[in-house]
Length: 286
Image (cartoon, rainbow, N blue to C red; front, side):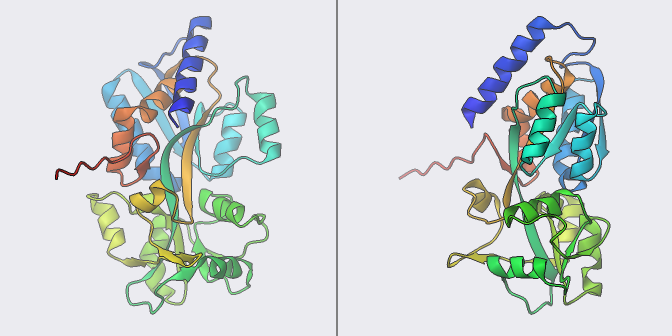
């Protein structure tokens, strides 16, 4: 992990030496596009960055993950946040349209979680059971619509195409949780980031409405948490990363660097996610 961020820093420094652009890491006006599932961590990082650098304006637009990638490739956005791996075709398109080497900047571990109403008799789900549900016609799983990070990611996990999986849909992660009582036999599938902020008023309100289901796989039943995401024991752990088309050390690369250094990783941790570069350290005194 440490090697990749060092490579990113060196690359950005070399580019900054070659080009003189109107914006720099402390000032400018750029657009970042992210899936709504990553709203909380995106807002926290951009807010703190603009506080640190008042002349930097970061406009955050929330779109489905596929649309976010399209905006990056068509120069409508400087930076995007992704959670799934790009397909071979997408990688070729990126390489042909972006004059940068492929260098995803990982910054956090998030997860896909499965929730039911508090009074639901369901106590857990198995890894294979989820796959069966995705292929059945019962549509018991509720996602936040097609082409988003959640449906894209789970299809990729099981080696399925997005057209193969079958599910019900509501407009957002928050609406899934808020309306789940209306569909007692269904299971909501949302991002951990939606409810992960430990002391966030809205996150706590949403957490109090549902029961998070542990996942059984290979004889182990595992709850999503920072600890189980850290070593990826939780089966639906996913790594969030930045992609940029900025070919110099400008505001986009400055923000990415900030998010991957200690202060940015502390912000990630305060959102209840597992930082990619910073782990909790416990010291035991005998």
